[in-house]
Image (cartoon, rainbow, N blue to C red; front, side, top):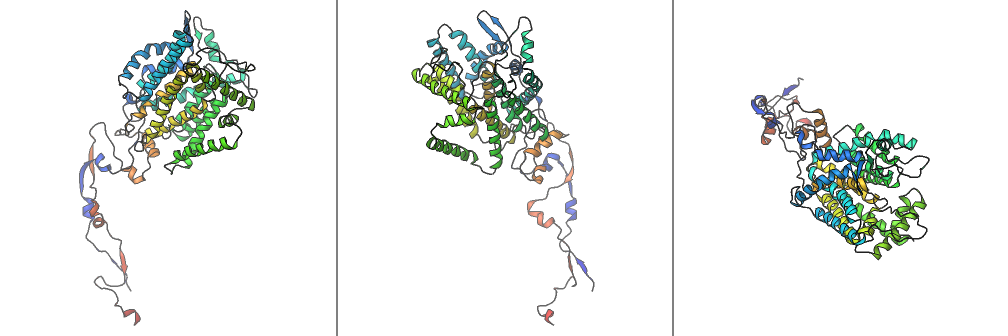
Length: 533
């Protein structure tokens, strides 16, 4: 019996062959749940990601610790730059020129004002010199970043500079670890008329190795400098560079932080790794950060109830290299709080603090405690309130529609959450004091950013890196990504493409699959009772 091939429906092939001239942008337009992200230096105007000259000079000053004496004053290259820039930038910030006036702006200025007042009360003979240098480094670094880091492209460029700066210090750090000589600082000491703002630190070796400081005042400062770059590279640059390169540079940052042989730097890296791991494991849980905060609160209460030590002392036990260091820092906290209780309003200024007779060193390894001791509880409240307010508000911003801003926000938050805990166990001063709040100020644009700033502007010849960036960021299906809308610098060329089918005509245009049957085309098949005969 012959098998005959039957097809039904009209011939829709001619409809599919109808061609009309449309633009490429029109042919690719389709709904997409995520906009196309972008990056500085890929396929958008280069000006958007270019760093201003004052920022480049600031970064150079951080890496080149030189200065000179003017009478009783010592001016480093960093202080000279900030001395020139701080007044006009501060006035413009108060005028709302950098995205409006933020609560953090006012609170940080109140902190500097109260610190100056506290020094005037406790040390009137040294108030001009110390209040000027301390306030200049703090507010100068913050305002400089507020003024010149204003969008995601500039922040991305700053992050790359940070990562490459850390990478360039690796050879000098390795040599210093083995020989015990900070090469750059010792070379600067031999230059006539120049006085390095950092001197070789007299720190005890650990594990038979020299603690590395490279160009900073203390090894812990070098360690913190490297930890800031870790999340900016590993988290922030995902999709902006190849995975092997990104992971390699992040590992270099972590390794350089380890060379400082500082428990504070290692703690910052470990906290960032834990946050990255938590975010990846619970990536499908929208309330993952609230769950984490709840677990931390529960752990704190459990330790407080079940342990004969305070949670802070338990934390120090696991956050230091030795039990002796943990015990020493717990003593610092106890006597530091005693001094705060004795001088709660204006602190003790630059005077020596009261402590046990056997505590021979005046060093205080706790940045937040030093602020309260030296300038009083009001100064502590001002700086902590501005710090926490910015972190909280930035964390609440919704950047789900802009993957690039969302990603850099996470990297910046991870860096400062780790740094916040580390500052409980270390102190920062001089260049690192300014740099910490420079990086903090570089993230204030997150508070005023508009989702969509990171959109790539496509050209007629797509950049392969931009295409890789789109694939890395997009969470939509492949067919939706191919149909994502593109923007053009100039009018796009037109070429004939098939006309898009209307949604209601899809079924009519689709040719049904052939149906094979042994019955003639006009037959209805066997009757109900034919099979039984």
